[in-house]
Image (cartoon, rainbow, N blue to C red; front, top):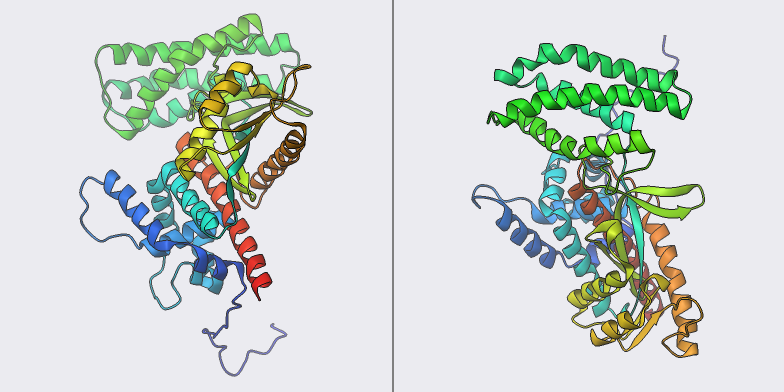
Length: 448
């Protein structure tokens, strides 16, 4: 029996809300150059679709959703719910006078369509607004590198082989023909992989015991791989989605199996080791930090322009890219965005060499503030060197903020390296958008 009496009249399902003009989402909506972003999105879409016909996307509204997800770390479903029920989010998306409802699939597909290049261009638009408002000084830039960790389990050999067994089992169930005949053959082998995995986790306590279990699993996995390779070598191709995944896994295992065997026999990790079957572009980044010696993911370069705004870019070559080469890359990225190299540039001692300093000066940098190695003197005046040290210290703080839970640069919910890169750029966009509305708010307060 309910203790609460039901109301005589049903409560109203519609409300009238007066929005606060100082709310961050309202201010963000007013400062973003939406026309520029719409033109950018239209250009990217035109380059990706086969035929530019049919209904056009709601560019302004979905770009508002992308901005919302950048400044507030949300899942696509949470973004859909917030936009429909939260008035400031609705205002940011330009939906206050519209009955159109945006679903999470629409936001996801649009974000996927933009890709890393689209997010990077959104960031360039935010930096352009900051430049026009006098909030950044592009003549000074400090750089650093950081790792974007992937949301993956620790990549040990037994785990990788067990995951291969799971994926093969899953995809063989969806194919037919000659590959369909493998299902019954593989059943006992896949069952054995699961048993060996359980044995490794529960009963193998020492390194030697784990290595013995690993070798047994290696031979089972190798036999499965050879069976599949035998059919593929006969010219039998698979056109379905599951079939293409089997072919892709076969290519990955062709490289990974020798690497696994190398570790099982020597105890040392092979060079350029594959650490994830579905994102095989990921790599291990040795950082030497207390409590976290190695991070697994992608290596990024971060530029902090004077004023506190950031640029981010994926480092081509990853962990094998030298810091000396990175300095030149960072300056090129800055030049692409602002039209000229910075006059003052700062970086840590990893980029120091007399030859590298000459190259950087040749690129247009007047004062190269790279920390020297050993007893070498600073390549700039003492007072300017002290200034560079202070400014460079702030880069670490900005990187830490971007990696916080608010922006989600680290461990994004991504199943591909392209998605990881997109969400990495989105985190930097969110940081710059928040910085922009805060700094413009300060300017407006001073003006008043």
